[in-house]
Length: 566
Image 1 (cartoon, rainbow, N blue to C red):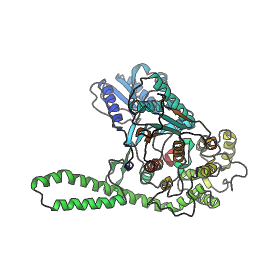
Image 2: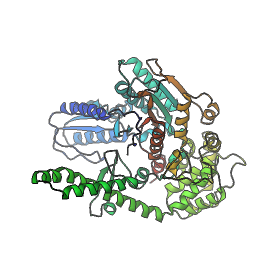
Image 3: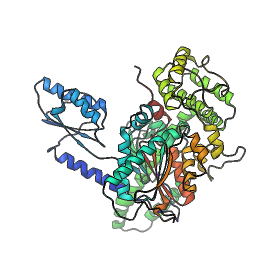
Image 4: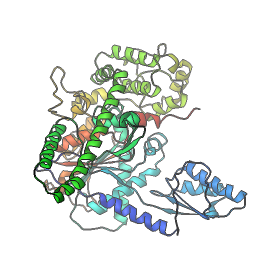
């Protein structure tokens, strides 16, 4: 949910314009089809329709294009001929057209593009809704989405720019910046008063530790348990206390808050009840019932749902012994009691609670302790984790123990030997411990941390850890660049940059646009990071707008790297 304004904080741009532009273009594309009478969800099943024309609105994914080719071939096999059109969003790729040609249906299908790059999820969150960006770019080395990200940035620059300063770190961030810069230089330049002053681009692989940590902020917990999709969450019967599921939007329009805000709501409710009891005539009563009572019932219903969600989360987390899990994670982050942490992880694996959870803990151990040597029976999954840098090469003498003999069915020594040889050249070394010390990511131990009065961004992890990604953003903005940060950028494999905007202007005066910073996460962003940036904005009297390729968490991140093995 959107951040609470400070009195001197600047206002956010109105991103509803993005929705209107996308809607108008889609209407235009569909009107060209004439008499579109029914919509079907793409489910990769045979199409049952009597229509003589089919229009497919899809992401440019090879599997989906092959399915469409099969639909066309099936129709032709039974002597049925229709008109077929594919609308790719946000853009079409040459690879998709190649599939149509290879399948022998290229001449039967027409195609178009719906340039729906950006979906506003909240007043300060915009998503490209491209969960595949992470795997495609950081694992497969497929850079096709770089142009898409550059086009999304170009659209924001055109509508809400020009941007005066652009900072970034990461190989992909630099490519996206260059793609955007080329598009701006080739396109129309628009002179206007900017709504957004500065931009910060950051690759997901700059900070893998943060998304691997258990989330404790409310939206993060809801996402971990129920999975938030496109800004909404579907609560099942265990939450709704009925036999039906219910979908709810989770954004600033949901006025239900927990804790202190609920106390204020109760006071407000009491005022409304008194208002109802005082002398109102019939007309006023009707207006009250029609308007105010309707709103009260809506908020009461939402409040009941959120309370039900909290109860469901508590039950699941209590069952998982969540406090012990958090204690282990915090110890790993601090570099404290590592032997006990390894014992906990070994027991977790032996109990076979969850493969994803086990992988998450192993990766967190690997990253925070500069590498751990073990093998996993899921051969391709292990290779992917190793290649992308989530499992890093063990250096002699750096780790306390080797886990091959103790991790049960999840481990296979033969596999480990083969993979060590095959992927040693691809393994990355983690510098988390040194980075943590240099950037002071771990608050001083022994000090009481009052979560009711948070003093820094560590509050999002119960005071245990400040997200590396957000700390970098804070420090670079304070320094107005990377000067004096050479040691940090070296440990992060470089690719940092800080440049003035395409119009060549830069202002150091902290005008409202200069206090609105667009942060673009390439490879996904967590709700924990969003909460941290909102806190930072409140503290500094500025606003952060999060632009991400997708909302992610530990499960999504790891699942995207797992190969289907039957």
